[in-house]
Image (tube, rainbow, N blue to C red; front, side, top):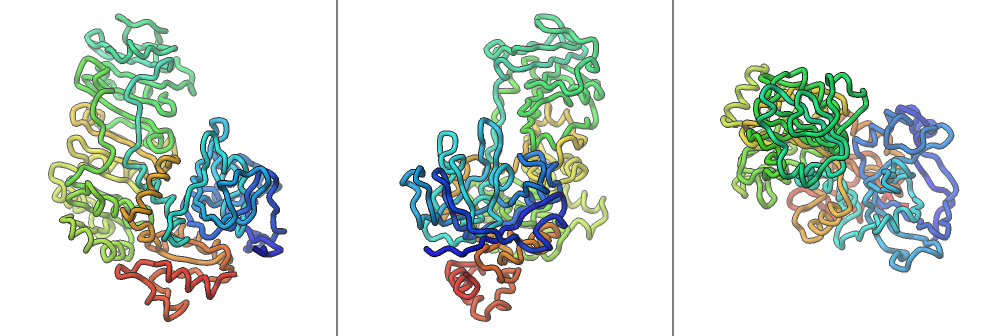
Length: 546
C-alpha cells in the first residue's frame, strides 16, 4: 500500500477552540514510520464526543491528560476511532496483520493509571496513527478488538459510545466493606443499639475512626467531624441513627473514590446536600437500611438496568447519547413499559419520535415526548406526577446539572434508580432525601465509562444483530470539517452522533437527513428505517476519499 507523504492531524496547543489546529486547519506532518514495537494504522472513521469538547476547553488542566504543556507538546485528541493496519514493526506479533480492521477500547491503563487513547497518548483525529505496545499488548490483553464483519466504518466508530450506554446498565458497586480499608462510623442518639454485623467482622478495616459511638468498636474517637483532615477520605462511611443533617453532610464529604456510604435507622428529614458529581466520576454509592444490623444494607439486591415493564424518564434524552439510552430501554430485551423523554429541543424530540416510536409500539412500549420549556414549572411537575403516579422506577440524567438532578430525584418511586450518566463535575452538590434511600430503597448510580469486557460484549451484540449501532448516526464530515463538527457537537446541532472520515479531507459536514445535498443518489442507499448503510459509505468514499 502506497502511503501519502504527509499526514493531516488536528492538534490541541492549549485551552480553547482557538488553540485547536494551526490557523484553524489540521497540521500536515511527514508520514510516521512505525518502530519495532509499533503499528501504523489508517484511521477509517472517528466519532466526535462531548468529552472531546471538555478536553479542548480545559487544555492542559484536564485531569486525564498526561502532558500538561500543550504549547510545546500538543495533543491529538479523539477516542472513538476505528482503523485498518497498514504497517507493523518487527516485534509486533503476527496476530496483527496488514489489512486487518480493528476497533480500540480507548480506556487504556498503564501501571494502574489511565492512559486513554486521545488523552494520555495521541488519539484518532488524524489520518494515520501510531499504536505502541501499551495498546496492542496492554496489561494482560490487547486493547485492539476485532471489527465485526458487515459493519461500515461509521457503524464501527459508534461501538464505543454504545458500549458506554450499555455499560451504564450494569455498573458495579462494592457489596461488602473494603477489607483493610478505611472506615468512618458516625453515631446518633441510640447508636449503642446498632451493630456493624457479620460483613464488617469478615472484612475488618485497617483504619477505623468513630464519632458519637464507642460501644463495641475499636478505633480512634473523634472530638468532632471537623477534626478530620480536609482531604481525608474513607472507603466505607456508616451512619447509625444520625438525624442531624449538617453532621451527615459533613461526614459524607469524606467518602473516597469507590466509597460506599450507608445510612441505617433514623435519618434526617428533608434534603441533604451531597456531592452528586462523585456518583459519576468517583463511583460513589449511597445505600440504606431500617435494620439495626448495618451489614444488611450491603446484602440488598441491586438492579442497575431499567426495570422490565417499568416506568422510566430520560432527562435530556433526545441528544446523541440520550437517544441510545432511550432505544436500549424501548426495544431491547427487558424493555421498559412506559417511557418519558424530555428535552429542550423540539427538533431532536421529533427526530427521536420518528426514529423510534413505531419500533417501540411494536414492543408494546408507550413513548411520550415533552419539552419542559413549554410548560410552567408547576405544570411540568404535575405532568410528571400524572405520568408516574407512584414515582419513576428509573430516571436517567443526561443533563450535566446538579439542580436538574435534585429536581428529578424527587420523582423517584419506591425502589427507584437515578443514573447520573451526564458528567456533573465532582464537587457539585444536590439535595437528596436520605429517608427515601432508607425507607424507600431509592438508589443513585452513575458512569459513562466502559471496560474492555463491556466493549467485547457490545461488539458481540452488534455482530449478532441485537442492535444497530448506526441508528445513532446524525451527521458525517471529512477531515477539514472536523473542527466545525466539534462546534456542532457543543451546540447540539445534530440529533445524533457525528462521525468524521479523516481520509475524506473535503467531505462537508452534512446531516444524515441532508445527504441528498452531497449526491442526489445517496438517499436511495439508506435502509427502510432511514439508516446509513455500507452502500452509503461506499458511495461517499468513492467520491470523497483519498
